[in-house]
Image 1 (cartoon, helix red, strand yellow):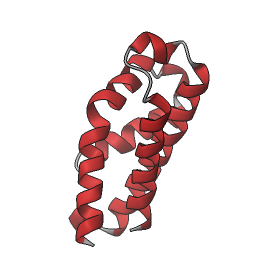
Image 2: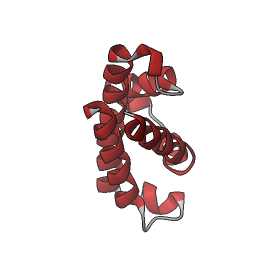
Image 3: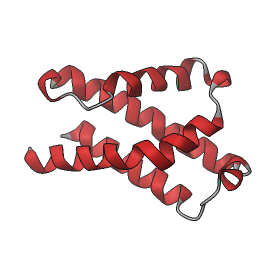
Image 4: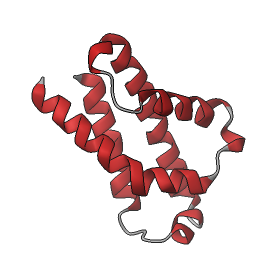
Length: 107
C-alpha cells in the first residue's frame, strides 16, 4: 500500500506542478518544473518496481515500460527528450492514477 500511495502522491505533485501549463513550450521554458517532474517520475518508477516485486500478481499495467523509463531517466538522463516527458504527463499519468486509486481502494 505504501508504494501505491507514493505513486499517487508523485502523480498529484506532477499534476500540481504542471496545472497551469497547457502548452509544451511553457513546460520546456520552466527548468525548475522539468526538474521537479523528473524527480517525481523517478519516484513513480522506483515505487512501481518495488510494488511489482512484492505483488507480482497485481502488477501495474505498463510496469515494464515504467521501470525502463525510470532507468533511462536516472542512468541515461542526458538522452531523455522533454517532449516524451510532456507526453507522459498529458497522456499516461491519468490512466496510471486511476489504476493506482483502484488498487488502493481494493486493498
